[in-house]
Length: 157
Image (cartoon, rainbow, N blue to C red; front, side, top):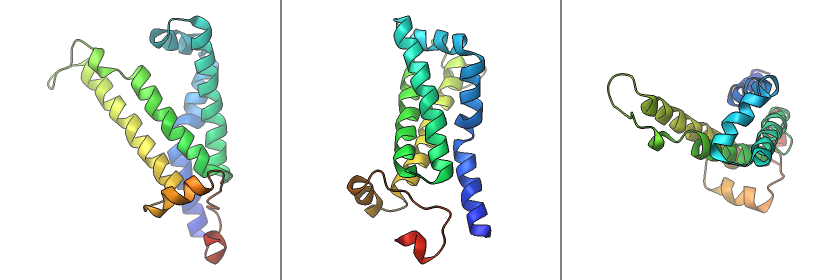
């Protein structure tokens, strides 16, 4: 029973940034989110579409990971989402004040950029498992579920 609880808590910690927090922020502050997206793309319709797609990825991907249903594909998609959002919205190289000491918006954004890729790494570990054979298994059946709440032989089948 503890193993099931630990697996659920680990998955909650991995997705809690997205569900409920980021998803809820997009709902409550939709116009601000679209405004932020408009900094990366000039077309307001595309910006709005990106925010809605992001919201869908955050909600449905997180729910799939928590439920353990097609969770490997959901983790793979969320890893890509983390990478894309880092490249579009954490562009530390564009900040004119990147400094190693003192206040620096560029350095703060650099850490956010790295955190996005660290979270992406966690999702890739969930998608592929802890070894090289997991990549092959994922490519063979990307819609497979990891069955995180089963123990013993039932989970390995």
